[in-house]
Image 1 (tube, rainbow over the protein chains, first blue to last red):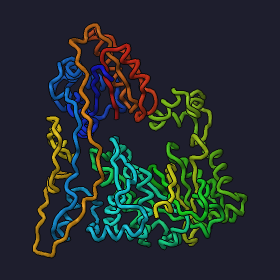
Image 2: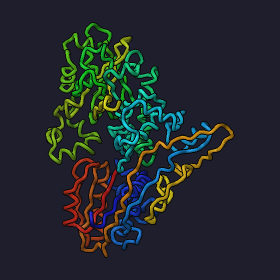
Image 3: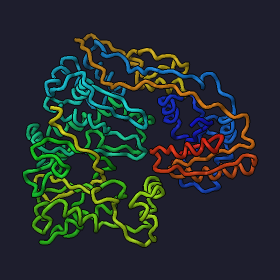
Image 4: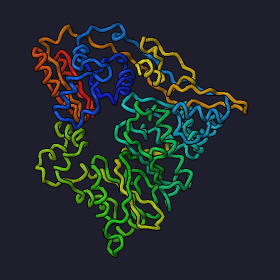
Length: 436
Length: 137
């Protein structure tokens, strides 16, 4: 900014703050720490913080602040120049597979399940899955709130090998990596990620979109998601607790993410990738992020001759914040029933859900996501937030800001009219064919 | 943990503290700092490093400090995390009571916490002498 400035950070984020300022080029920035948390505290409690000591330095907090702005700079604090960051040697070993396995685990390069050691030979074999050159830049990805790292086809291949991928999986991994979307979000919330795969690649890889589609029943479903997590850890330096990962509870889905191959043949509706503007014969991966997915079976109407699945979806989404999108994951039995009842397109179902899944303005404003994200957007005049914040507390508004926040995917083996609801936002669709 | 140890977790050399280029480090000294001995009597292989390529770090010098805050205007910037604004309100009261010669201006940054607000930075630089940014949680 060009004038003396000092950030204040709660003690819980000490390591993150120190690493962050270092990575952004100010390793000596004067940070004042407060006790944790500052949220949900009374004015008297916060006054005690201010009149007390910085819990890291042990010095009076306000003296820390005044000194941060007035004590002359040291030589270190005025340094300029460029610092190169090393990630170590290109190769580890030679050593036994067992010792190398342990080495990768100990240095945070795995998900702590056994990996395939990425030998030069195994990585060379992975190149057979793509026409792209090993040294071609694939993209960049940020692990946390830091400048992004970059990576080549070769670097992605190393991670694909580690995850257990075969060359035929490689175009999918490259497509995901090219999106720059990590599957490990640095947020203090515990994010989950999903990838919906459409097109001929599903059958080429023998992906499971039938019975147990979301379970551990097919190698391709398993390794694609796992590779995404290893890519996020290693290529973007993500998933380091306290540094690039701060999710308070973590999310079990991060092991191999939600990999969904849509059951296109059994669905009465157009597949997701066609909705997003691709041709049916193209192979595409569409990414989602949010907080997770929950089962919705057992709501009213399931055992009658006129089940109201759309109402069940709505009930399920009403437990979510609305900050993230709503993703309906429905068995083909449900999709067929909805079509019989007049929902001849996904869009018609989405229209109904957008209009009928509602909340009061009071409930909306009470959510911390609204305060942290939507309220500032309202202040900037962005809609619908500006209008919503001007409405009375008892006014009823949609659960989601935009109709496009809702998506529908059909998968499953038709053994049960089962569905799940995701608090998941669509982010991007990427062609897999371009990476073949 | 001091900054030197923290930086070693980055895969950075603590030489960063001295502004020197970081030397390449052996694998054993990387990442979480747990050295792993690579030895065995079994058949041996080599494994490739799966890490991406980090960008270089451009060191940014800090702005010159003030001689004193007396008679100066200090901006208090709330980034929008829960509680940050309320903490700054107490800091504003502290200045009023304990350093009344300091003028403070409170402002919530526009947009969510992750969005830049260059208009505000320009306003602060044009009207203020120093700034305190508070992050909640």
